[in-house]
Length: 153
Image (tube, rainbow, N blue to C red; front, side):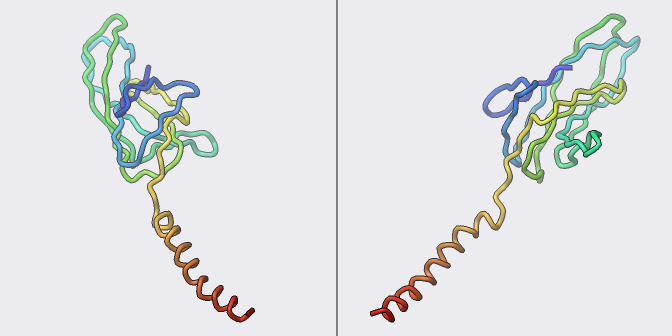
């Protein structure tokens, strides 16, 4: 299976060493293609998600960035290509580096690209208040410094 991702900046082929930078709240479109053969028409579920790996190596899909879709494959006695797309909405996901997975449930097959999507962390309350606190503290220190300077004269 081959994966590509469509963003506002264009199509990105994902592979070893490639990393895509996205923001929280964005939707990414994953383009996939694979070859199959099956004697009769088949409806199968495809799942796409961002994932992390547990400390022992198993894949853990991130629930806030997961989508499932049912596709219909025509009967194909010989190897036949299929291409499609599926969107993943990056809702309330935490910032960090994630892998991208696409699985075909019926065939037990999937592609797992580790560490290819970096989600920028949303600014938290401390990111917004921190600079204001520093300015307020400096403003409180000015009268103290003036009082010390007057006392030294």
